[in-house]
Image (cartoon, rainbow, N blue to C red):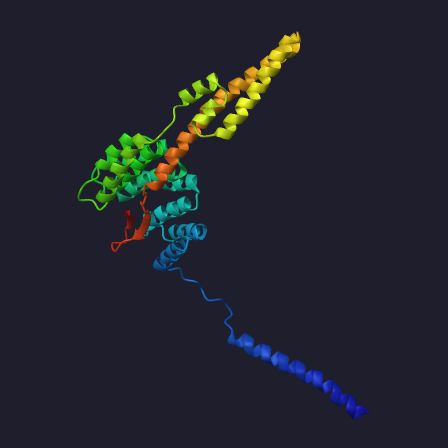
Length: 317
């Protein structure tokens, strides 16, 4: 009985010793301090570029910021800041992108990065559909840097801002300004010819639509092909006019006056609606025409062999 009890207590003791011995070996084999992490400027920059190429713009921004923080004197800092702004723009964070580009303009007033910043400022507004501001920055680039390598790209985009505003002749004239030695020349000439066709678009007259609606409610809507709306406008106005006339015939002058007042509202609304429908019709015609034009400005920020930011604009016609 005594010896049996002794064997039972030795087994757990042997297991504990074995566990302690194993832990001691593991701890002795492991370093006491973790290995230090060394950040390499080239590796950090290319990691940020890889994230950008994959479309992970939020993480790319953070990695470009990390690069500029740890390597503030590196020659690629302006490049990293430009790419950071592009990432903001690609992510639809236009205000943050423009803050980056404005800082570049202040720190590189006459250099290559200033030219790129001006172009990208204009592009950010263009992508937002703010044509007026886009024109300002493209024109600023053309005025301050007439010999810029981005001149033809700026002309191309400036022509498109005019197309957005349905200024067809102005757009054609701008496209015609592309240099015949430029790779953008064929595409710009094609757009110069195509944009003039905008002058012949079958647009409707809002004034005529309003006049027709005033003569006969619903006729203004029919003028722009909205026959159902025109039919509704005609029926509603006809019913109110008939009801008002009947009320006066039955000497119900108060009711007749109320119905007449309501009919004036429907009548005026019919005219306003016809004019508004015409504007919508014209916008759709112009939008459909623009959609058939090829806007193949492919904005890419690339690393060129000399480690500068390259701006390539490709056209496919």
